Length: 193
Image 1 (cartoon, rainbow, N blue to C red):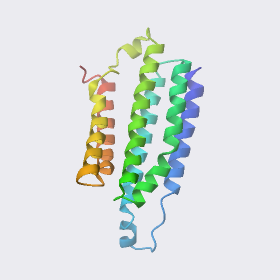
Image 2 (cartoon, rainbow, N blue to C red):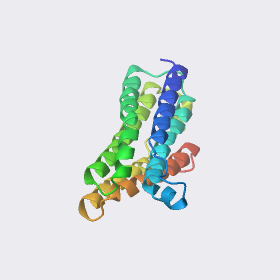
Image 3 (cartoon, rainbow, N blue to C red):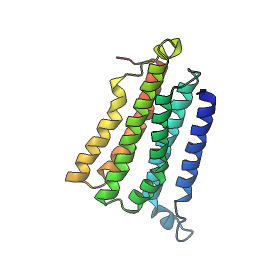
Image 4 (cartoon, rainbow, N blue to C red):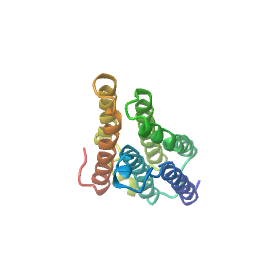
């Protein structure tokens, strides 16, 4: 399949998921700063989810500019990732309303772990299906540093299940920022292993 057609589809899905996500944030009960601040967990959860979705869009946008076609394996992996990211608004609002709930924290973390794994598998599938693409060969897609965000979320799980229930929530925030920074460094070719 040509990447232009698929990229348009993927961009539309990301835009729809972000729209649903922002529409799920309730308005403050009163037009006051204190009412606005009462919703801080909603805003932080939205911020985390938005950054994940934006980073997926940005990384895939950059990747698809280097290739012309994708194979069926890549298409199926992206299909699974599309299903998973369509669940992000549901679990984002659940954790935002229940920041001290272990099941809500767990599902919030699981959705991002699965997204990270599927994104990694999709990227590897793109590289495998384009072995002679010189543009792809210049980028270090196998960097171990891309696993740091995943490790942080696992640490968040340990915190949530032992001492601090919102551990996954905060680990997701830190890991998404690191995911963006590490991705930028790797794409720019400044760092490799």
